[in-house]
Image 1 (cartoon, helix red, strand yellow):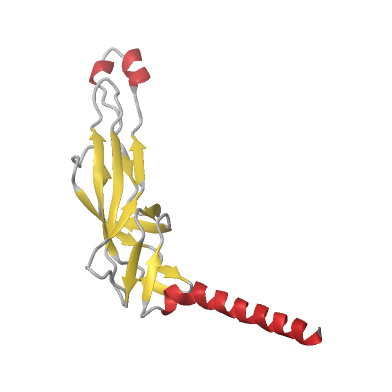
Image 2 (cartoon, helix red, strand yellow; image 1 turned 90 degrees about the vertical axis):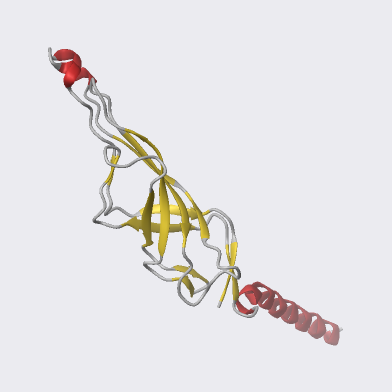
Amino acid sequence: MKQLIIRFTNFRIFAAVLLIMALAAPMADAGKVQLPEGKEIKVRFDPKMKISSGKLEKGVPLQIYLVEPIEIAGVVLVPKDAPGTAVVADVKKAGKPGKPGIIKIEFTELEPTGDFKSPENEKIKLGGTIEKKGGGKKLLSYLLIFGLFIKGGEGTIDPNGVYTATVKEGIILEN
């Protein structure tokens, strides 16, 4: 009976080791790592940019940069400051009488720079949006005689802000 218990204990230890190895396999498989769908990342814009509904048109691409490196199990897959792209998804300029402007930005992709690349040089597809509405001045426009000539505020996005995007589709990266 004692030998049976020892064998069962050894089997449990062996099974635990196999499980740990199986979980670590994505890291050990020839330098391949899965970047999972839904992983949140932090991005920023170039601080010199003016992101305003009064200045941009729908479809205009905007440069973004990774704020923090993307890491999986302590391994840096994509380093800080890796470039990416966002696009102006919708824009409405401010108008009269007191109508506010609106701008909506969608994150689209990130360049995997550093040691890890996608097998076919694909970019990491991103999801997430930012939408800002300018200040409306309709009440003021109705109260004043010349109110019909008062324009609302433009929608602006702070280029110095840090924004959250997500990995839209899981991707395998290799080194």
